[in-house]
Image 1 (cartoon, rainbow, N blue to C red):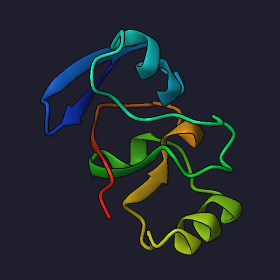
Image 2 (cartoon, one colour; image 1 turned 90 degrees about the vertical axis):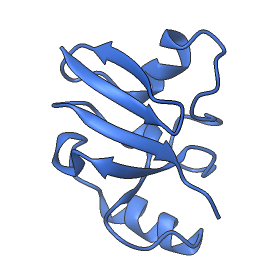
Image 3 (tube, rainbow, N blue to C red; image 1 turned 180 degrees about the vertical axis):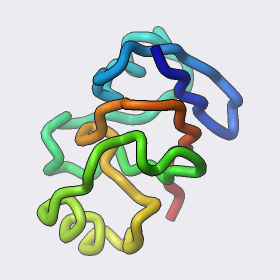
Image 4 (cartoon, rainbow, N blue to C red; image 1 turned 90 degrees about the horizontal axis):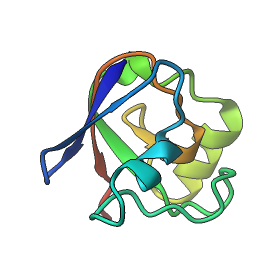
Length: 97
């Protein structure tokens, strides 16, 4: 089990190892969370910034990296939440423009 801390709300959710971050949608029961659209990595609705634990969300694939750059989110700290699987404690926030 690993803790996901969602900022700036300081909401903490505990999820099993290997869980996709899309589980936050169900765990938070409609509270302010990550906005998910397609859940397939093609809409860009779920861009997050990783504040801590970058190594615990799996490797970013080239397609995700290229898409994030197209959306204006270059750098390693930005991810599509729908493409992340949890392997340790992380602190994240919805990316702002």
